Length: 175
Image (cartoon, rainbow, N blue to C red; front, side, top):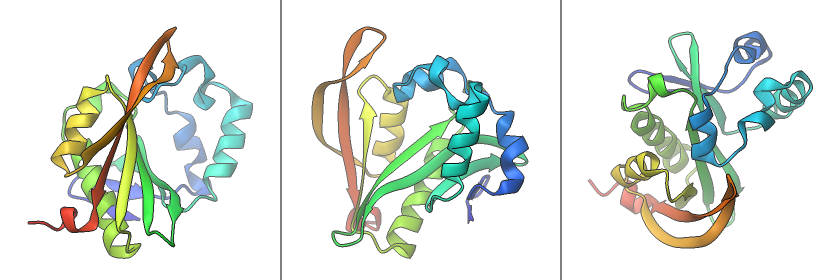
């Protein structure tokens, strides 16, 4: 479990099934991550059960709680222990929790864990170029743009660029 000023990031447990089953991300959440909301595992009991079973076994995967409400998810994946790097992902499910500093708080908490507990050298991420709010949060946390994967995602019958960003351990501790 990870704690920040206002939030708790905790691994999924069997006791969270009913609570998580009630979560319904808004359509704009899916647009920001480039997924089709009609394909969401939250809307399909069979997909939900399968996803829940797989997720409960994953390390470095946290559901974000504000009080007793699940407001999103954050995780490190594609962890490479030899090169000491991982990929970061975050999602805040609904608009009522956007623009409140939670993305900043979650990102700082996970980066601190990545660099202190996992002793990583680099954390990177991929973000859709039109997700300006997320890009701002990442930049405020020290991520820098490494490159652009041109027309890498086909969303709503249009091609969109992905931006690759990263932060190195010494950049996180520069202050």
